Image (cartoon, rainbow, N blue to C red; front, side):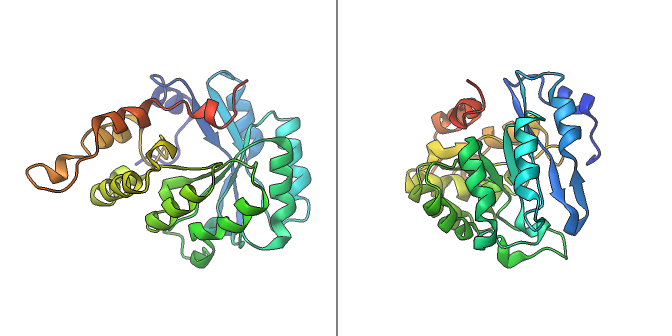
Length: 250
């Protein structure tokens, strides 16, 4: 697994795609940092297909100004936050000014609300339900829960069903086939399959690996009476127009 992927390797990974979200990250608390300027420079090489998301440290007093600068001056198009990597509690009112600015600027927030291998991270800050008060306070703010909130997938599904402007992506789930299958079946049972967005979590997983995992989703239940994920649902996830849904393109 190459987690030091270069821009050239990323371009090769997405060559068959209409576009790709590229993430900065301000995970200083756990040593995971990708600067906004680096992402902005890369996205300028193909602005019609590369959608850069900024990241700021919500614990810093200048985070709202830094975020607005990233959107207005660097032309980034969203915000990436990960409480388990940034050591903050998303439902703390101290951070609501940041979410208010995202709603004002009409840009989405992509959340890592799920588990992690990082020992220093705040696991209790990472439950998907922590986003519920934010969604209630900012009903026009589009938000995406990465990795379907794993391992709290059903909690994530309940959250997404509750709020019209919330989505979830399936990135990184392809490496856990049984969890992946059950996540899609639960989404179908709750009627939120149309709110699942495609994602790979590159460089941890490639686009090809993720698509292949999706296409093989029913292999685990072949020859059993367990429910199948309809092929139409799989195709819809792969071809869903995420940039348009999130307002990343005019």
